[in-house]
Length: 116
Image (cartoon, rainbow, N blue to C red; front, side, top):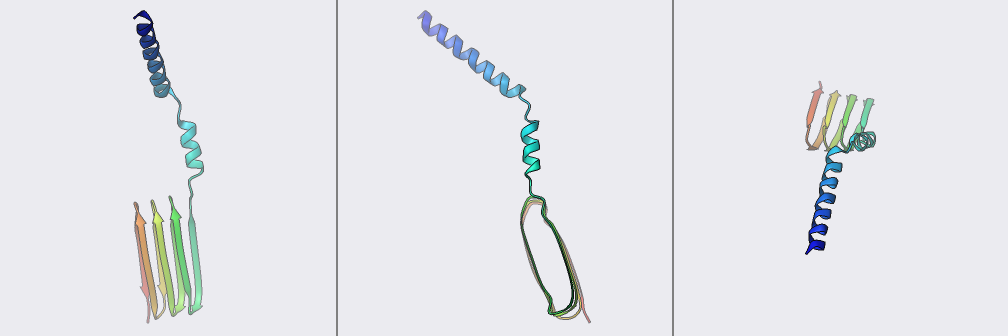
């Protein structure tokens, strides 16, 4: 009986020490390593002339992209899958076409099309 109580007391002490070590641990190094490895994708496409085609596809955490097309007969595709996505699409000219798909948390987009 005494051995059983001693084992139980030892296990309780080990459990308390484990819980204390987890509560007192410094996890900042893990967070810094995670932040360091976080993908930060940025893209900028600038096209002039005619028959322009641009595609922007970003899968990651901190994405944003800009497409600027000047001329005529533009086609642009934006597909962002991830967190904190944003895009800007600016098409100047006639016969513009665009496709946009965003799936994530911070979905923000701006489209400006001007033609004559």
